[in-house]
Amino acid sequence: MSRSMSEKKLGAGRVVAVAIENNKTSQYAAKWAVDNLLPKDQCLLLVHVKQRASSIATPMGSQIALDANDDVARAYKQQLYNESRELFASFRVFCNRKNIQCQEVLLEDTDVTKALIESVTTYSIELLVLGAPSKSGLVRRFRTTDVPNLVSKGAPPFCTVYIISKGKISTVKSATAPLTTKATIRNNASQPQYQLAPSPERMDARLMRNHPPRRMPTSF
Image (cartoon, rainbow, N blue to C red; front, side):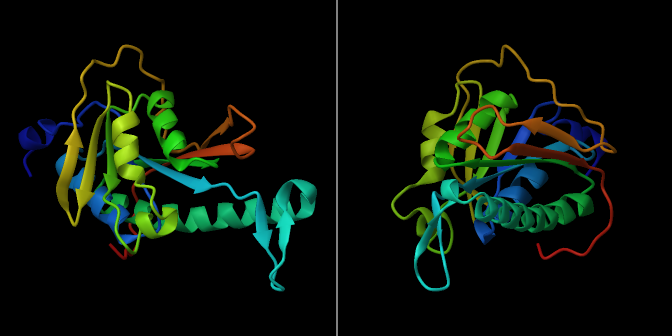
């Protein structure tokens, strides 16, 4: 692609984000965003929400309340962190191959839809891309909750929301108002960024990392 064509991409100079899960629909969404919205060397925001659990099951089938056992709660959060690192790594590999920098935002909330909508305002996301629900993805995990469409309906007016199905646009909700105040997101790829969570309903830390492109194998 020529430089002039790259510069004409809709996401040039804007905050573009993809909401990711460990499924194929998220991979389709990320690939579509990179191919259609972002010029090379621009940063893509990868947003992942872990749904908070109030208890976890033991091997014997009983439930342990997380707020009643600090050790179990710490071990649970460490497990979430490790799983999220692996998830981000797979998407980071793809971005590296496309010469796209990426920043990672890891959230934990009881309400995935609310967390995603709030992240749009927090990070001034002007273009948000989500994978369409499928039986092997969001619909199965959240049952009757259609997270992508709920996010599309609830997103702030300055944000255009794309829902991607198998590499093509399924639905799009266009922004109806300009972004008035833009959040400052540092683009220093050599230094990880950490931010404290804004409410007790979120995990102890929100992880936001900036990664420079580097060559690695990919499963995309």
